[in-house]
Image (cartoon, rainbow over all chains, first blue to last red; front, top):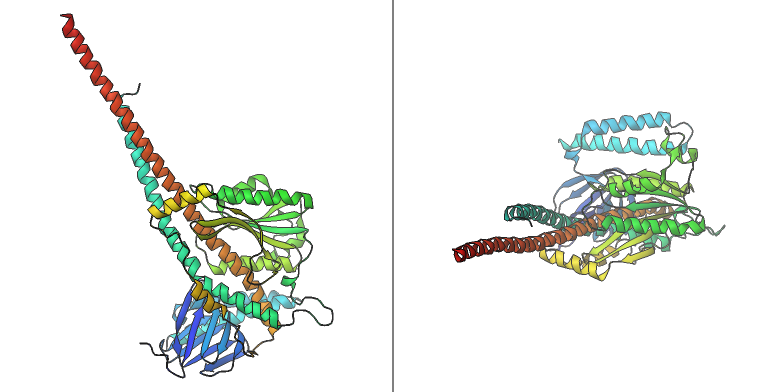
Amino acid sequence: MAEATQNELRVRLVTPDQVFIDGTADAVDLPSRSGYIEALYGHAPLLAELGAGEVRLHGGSVGEQRYFVAWGFVEVLPDRVTILAESVVKPGAINPAEAQQELERGQKMWSEAGEESRRYSEANRVIREAEERIASAASSGK
Amino acid sequence: MANVLDLRRRIRSVKNTRQITKAMKMVSAAKLRRAQQRAMVARPYAQMLASVLDSLVRRVDIYDPETGELRHPLLVARPEKRVAVVVVTGDKGFAGAFNINVLKAAQHFIDDSEGRHLEIDIEAVGRKGKDFLRRRFVAARFVDQEQPEHVQQARQRQARVEITGDHPGILEKLSFDRIGRFGQELVNRYIAQDVDAVYVVFNEFQSVISQRIVVERILPIMEVGKHDIASATEMEAEERERMAEAATSAQVSLQATDTREADEEARKFGTAQVDYIYEQQPRKLLAELLPRYVSTQLYHAMLESVAAEHAARMTAMDAATNNASDMIDSLTLIMNRVRQAAITKEIIEIVSGAAAI
């Protein structure tokens, strides 16, 4: 029986298409908008928006796992972590060439943005997502 | 009178047709099962998003204390002067009255709005609807195609009802990515006050025997987690019976899958009775979540519509198969009669010939 032992977090990763992961882990790294957060058992209740980056699970039933998310939303409770993510990709499945193209597109948008702050922030978002994607793909080989 | 050979040929051809409709029915049944499954696994996300939004809306003072205004534009209702209507039909025919029913509801909505002097922008999803609406209404003309963001300002309206876009291929492979972009586009138009409301006309599908055509308002958001149905047409009893019959023969379950437990679980998301630390300002979270909520609603409308389309096709093909069987029976009867008549005639000829000698 999968004993729900102490000090383990119940982790769920939910996308619009399916429930991606439903398991337990000792710790979860979350790419929040303002930087990575690590959630351990007993974490204070938290709601946060996730930016582009990797969700990493350590220990527990699911083992070491990493997933790239482009945008997400997370609820952390002392004994559980629930992540809503719009798209989830395994780092190994990322196509670096595509990400590179995306990065160039973002840079082009940035240089063409002109006066509008909205277009700047959109360009920045694209650039950041592409950079994270490339970094994630590069580290998956190790 | 037709001779035996002709009838036999005719029967063979009807039998071939029956083979085809039977195969199509089974294919539709399989696709329906898959579509139902997909709609079910998509529920937790939508439910979680709705519940966290609901709790956010309640916690965050969405009214500005100084001006008393709502803080997020998507929650503000304006008097309707121009609305966008998303009409969701199928890409293919052979689905009974499925496409027609949706289009009828859309037409009804458009006719109704005439008295209110409402301007309507149609967004057609699905090839059948696009073709139908194209014949009736003009396509919007944009002066400047270069910058999609500013298209709306550079537009010359020619008629009360115009088609502003279609989305070919969006139903073939439903991806949240693409629908999310479509949703974002609608949200942008709403925020830019280009439209004052967004309606979706689609075939709602809870289970094979529980379906209806609805006109649902997805923008502005009046109450999170509630469907804002402007009008609904229930399925006729006769239609429902036929659906049930077809589903039973194709071994598709009639009941909606029980998702209460999962729903209950999902409803807890973001609503625990504790003081959350908000990593970002609640107001910013709200601003990020609301447009996504609109997209999930759109996604759901399309998932359900696809399931309904397969169910309708399955039913239509079941009816066609039954008709073919009936036709084969009556043709066989006629053929036997004709053959018997020929035999009788020959016997009479022989007998009367013998009597004459």
